[in-house]
Length: 295
Image (cartoon, rainbow, N blue to C red; front, side):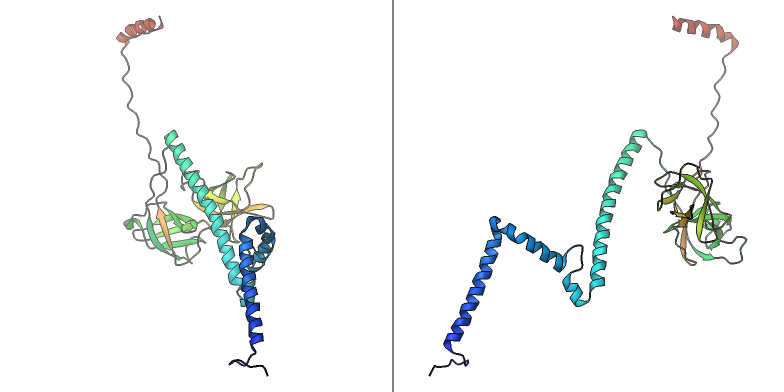
C-alpha cells in the first residue's frame, strides 16, 4: 500500500506538480529572454501593439476603466492631456512671435503703447437709468477715474464711462444699442462698427463689400476714432443667417468687478517757434553764397 505524505498526497502527484511548475517558470523565463533578442523581438511587436491598444491605448478607453466603471473619468483625463499638448504648441508659437515682434520693434524704433494704469471698482446693474444697458461703479473722480475711461474685466471690453461723479461713475455697456465701438478682426483685419443688439449678440455695420470676417476669429478694438485703445478683446465673430454678428467676450456678472483705464489720449503738439526771417539787406549776400555753391 502506497504511503501518503503528511499533506495527504502521494509523492508521485507532488513530484508531477513540481515538474509542471518548473516547466512553467522555465518557459516564462525563456519567453522573456527570447523577446530581448533583436532577431525574435519583431515577431512579438504586432501582438504587443494590439494588446496595448486594447488594454490602455492613447486614443481609446482602457479595458480596466470599462470594467471599473471609470469611463467618463478616463475620457476626461485624455481630453485634458490632449488640450495640454495643444496649448503647449500655442505657447511655443506665442513665445516665438513675441520674440520676433520685439526684434522688429527694436529695428523700427517703434514707440509702443504707454503702460496702462487703472482703477478697479465694483459694479452693480442699473434698472432705472437713462440707458437700457448700464452699470454703476463705486469709484469716481476722487479715486482717479478719468472722463471717458474704458471698463474691462477678465472676459474683455465691458463699456465706457459716460457720466463721472466724485465717488461713482456710470458705464455704458457695449451691449447697449446706443454704444458704438470701432472693431476689427484679429486674423482677417476687416474693420467695422459694433453696436448692441437685442438678442445678446452684437451687430456690425460699415462692413466692406468684398471681404468679411473669419468664423470664430476674435474681434478686437481697432482704435479708430481714438475713443478706445487698440487690441481689447470684444468677442468672437459668428455668421448667422448670412449676417455677421459678435458673441461678446466680457464676463456678465451683475455684482462683479471692472478695471477702468484712461482713454487713449495723444497730447496736442506745441507750436514750433518760427525761424527769424532774413533782412532785405542780407539778400545779395545769400544769393552770392548760393551761386558759389552751384559752381
